[in-house]
Length: 437
Image (cartoon, rainbow, N blue to C red; front, side):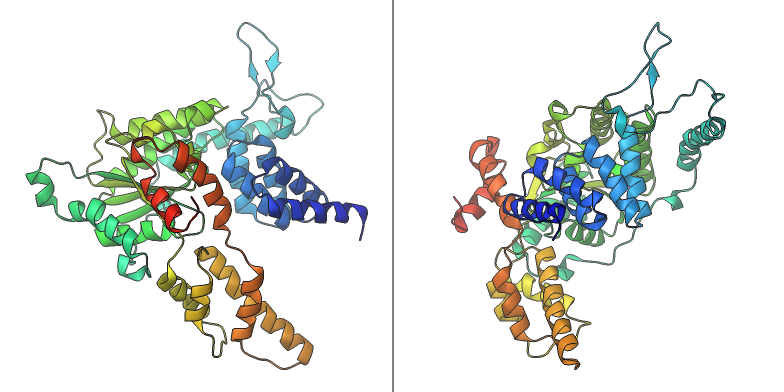
């Protein structure tokens, strides 16, 4: 093993023990990228960007990593965000000298003063840049078909287990919206906002789609890359257009994924691009000139404590619902789903579900993948095919730990010391039941 690979191994083990050490993960990603291991680097970069979506160094490396493994669409998404956060050079007032924004080594240097004699490509690049700037307007003026409006067939009955979550949804959100006569009787407007929060990989997006299906509404999912633009003012314009199209397509569930990135606390934001998006989001949700009747806003986040408090005030996302790791019935259903097209014999799914308390849906999918790998290894050694067996799962379960533990370690501090107005009472109750408090 080379010296570099030894260092990578040591750092990987350290990162596994402390996944919240973002500086370590960023350094490890840099080493992996230099060694041509783009896929592995992306895993760590995604974790860094989940916590710090405006980290320019992580975004720059994510562009390189995604390009290196042929994930062009993902690379372009990172590139758009990077350019929005670190825009082209601008002249200082009263000066002919162009000022470079911070971290200028992370993005290409553009100069729109005209082509340079020593750069024959400059004119072509300028033409392309100006075409891109105009393309935003032409795209936003196109038909609604460019937006990925879904008409989900999912219903809450399709969500296995999670009875408490579904009951809360029906009573506090779905019930009133499905009975407009009750809303009229009590003088309540037909609009709503709900924030789903909890550890990653536990089905928040799936539940949001099922909620849209229950309402018989169209579903539009919006992320940071759909909104941010490198040109001044276009991010806010994009967000406004998204809301306008949702209003025209009402009834519609507008799902804001990773709200801690779109609606990050302005006190934590280092770039005006993100701050402007937060202000625009606040304006779209309940300003005087906007009629959101029939637009039901659902949002999801792994870090509710990073969401701007103005977004959670009454009239906006004033209800929060904790989405916990799947219960035993849900875990059994998820395991069965991931084994449905795999050869499996005499696998005691109920027993496995009992042994995987605290596992997220993503953890359970990984469990099935790992069990299948053991069966493949056996088939390669012996030359005979065999089905995935109960023993494969027993071996894998022993070496796996739920990925949700790191989230609960962080969430515990906020539940104890930042529970203003009972905001995290559901989380406190769960932590007590699990003897984590």
